[in-house]
Image (cartoon, rainbow over all chains, first blue to last red; front, side, top):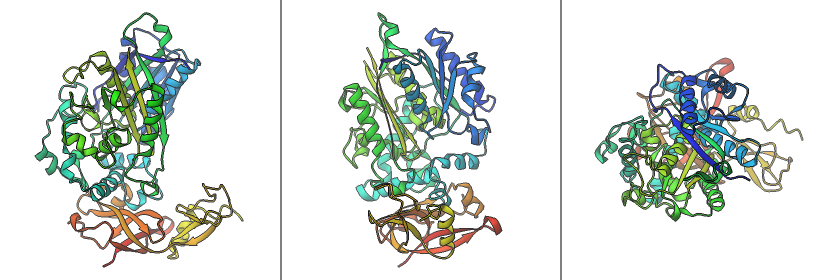
Length: 383
Length: 139
């Protein structure tokens, strides 16, 4: 397999883009990435997206976007794995280029969520869960995370307020990211007093949905001989678990995160201690804790400790959500995984203005689909 | 043995008759909900229906303020929150269900580990009528 390098990145702000269609947003991100890569064309396009069929009544968006951006004729597919669609598309693109079948590709994520009524968006997001055995019993996507968090508090004795540092860190880091959805400072008092969504998850535990698109251009690293630095994909892992939370043997352990992280660590020949930053999937504050635990940064039940002790901050042992994370950069579901990749590249290039991790060489991104049924982990390195 | 009988429709129909039925693999002595026509452990297809206990314990719960569509249609939502949770049946099998018999205005009064009892209800009209399993916290 050939090593794959990222030579261009592009993103739109995550926002309520009422004046822009999914296609316009997708196009902006692709043009930005192609321009950044200084290349006019690629051989393939893979787009991560979850909700275009449900909310936009538009499927077949691979060919649709390829044509729009002037790449009519190339191979182009949509990849869907709920909120992990972005990273799933990335893995598909990386495998295509690594295999030698494809020589260059745009990999992107694009999502449009805010044109729809919030109830419709909630219902559409719930399709990531088991329709017949979870959703009809009143469990939305948020509620499933709430069940996990409730049980976690019960099992390990944490208080809800102990999760505040995760949300506060994301909000703080988003302040200097011009593409972030929320530029609102958060403190512990505001976190505790936020309106309830699905007990114990309140509004300030929850990520902000939004519209947005993010894209990268990938090529075989061998094409870049002599150039420096090269940002390459040194680890890629994917794993699954049951859709239904109640079917999991260990509902408080993200087994797919553990499996995909181990797979990525093994490929990369690195471990948790070698990472300079970790863009994790803080769709809800509980997921930040579980992701840190399953990826080897904390013992079982001890994830919140990393937040309380400041280890997750820029300059801490493992900076997370350095550009605002899902909580504050925003969570345009199927695009989120590609925002994470773009942000890790920004860090490795030294372009993370305001929240740059000094001397960042190795960064990891982890994208979670549903409440943990699909999880992908990618490790990037600058060399 | 025909495998079609372990369907979502058959499961629903039996719920409507007040029975919680799982498919059971005699070789592995394992029960499955949703009922599976094939055992994912031994890949055997000699499955049998087995009635599940209707008592269990509350393993996790949440009081939902922002509801999915089906619950909004049933009259729940921002002004009328409800409780849903995961129940562990007496035989260890777990499933999700709406939880009643709790004070949703005081989530802190709801306790993990509480005993629950299944209640079979139906919602919707005519062709849309559907059987539901609800668990009620019993003292």
